Amino acid sequence: MTRRWWRRNALALAVVAVLAPATGLVIIGNEWWGTYQAAPVFPTTVDPGEEISHAGATWGPATVRVRPGDPDVDLPEGTTAYVVEVPVDPDSAPVACSTPTLRELQGPRRQWDDAVSYVDWDYERPTLCDSEAVGPFTIAVPFLVPDDAVGPFGVDVVLADELLGFLRFVVSP
Image (cartoon, rainbow, N blue to C red; front, side, top):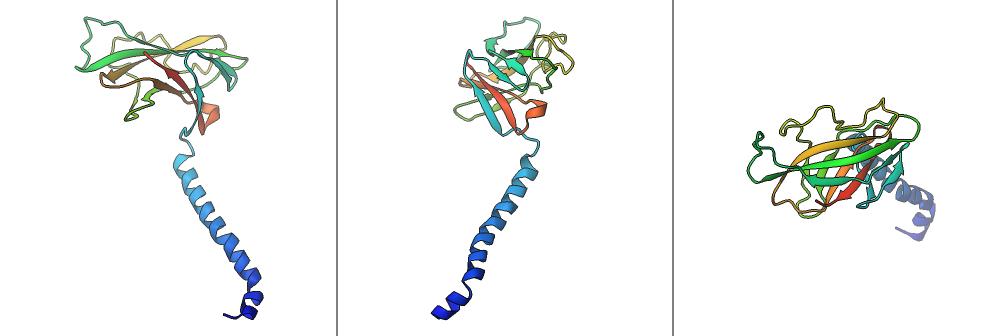
């Protein structure tokens, strides 16, 4: 390849140098979006004891406590029942969210779904956002967590209008 060849093909080489990585990024971005388009992947972290104004409501502060033992309920051996509560005060319009999940923020980073069907739970208590409620309410959700789980925990609340983002409240029992 001579100097003349490089000069003659400089524009084409520059186009290839720009378009090859751009094509790769578009392909990767398209695959990522196809995989995660409806999944919460970007947390907005709320520190313990704090509240946040987000998505048309004031959220928090979130709390977690050990659920008192109930002699009529047999929990699996090696587990503890926790109850997570997140106060929600909609600003002017109702908010929509899913039932929170609980996850370890350290160690194996396990995640737990609600245990409403495993504990004696008052089904009148909201476990997700009431999309018609205009006044303040508290989301209360029980979780069965293995005794070897280490805190602090993250309470993940997915908001319908905020995907790909979600709220993560940091709590410690």
